[in-house]
Amino acid sequence: IPSFQPHLCLNTNNEPGAAHSSPRITVSGAAEGRKLRRRLTRYYASNPDALLKIMIALEFGVIDEEVRSPFVAGATSLILFFFGALPSTVPFACVSDATHGLIAAGLACGAGLFVVGMIKTWATRGNMWLAAMENLLITAAGGAVAFGIGVGFQSLIGGEESVVR
Image 1: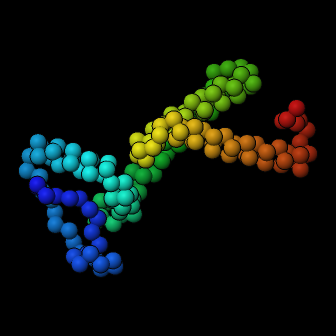
Image 2 (image 1 turned 90 degrees about the vertical axis):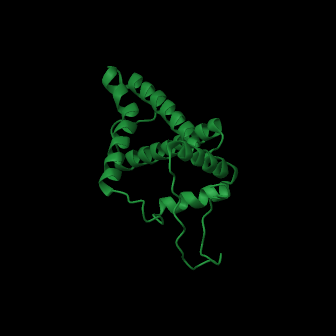
């Protein structure tokens, strides 16, 4: 496909609002498939607007051939939440003192959030260290707000033991 330029068409007249069907691209062999994949990767790497448009089309199910299973989505969510909860719970099972468990859980969660922030750049193509710090700081701010709400609630109900000393 010498002159193939991937794009997200709106219609045959390039007018917004009218729909049309794009011709199918067929690939005859594995080598041709790899060549096409490299060309598409280069194109979308150099055209972030086109990449955003194709990601939106895939995310919102505009492409008819892409069918998502709610069961697969639910199972994936369950597995990710399970593994996401491990760093904050496992340390308490490994130590006998709550203070040491809290420190270990905080460090494990911080490391996990930092790694997730770094992995996020695979999809967004941003700065790996900046995304990792952003993920860690936003979550830390959310944790501080949640802690403040908890302390405020405890003082409202007149808890016997204060969390903050």
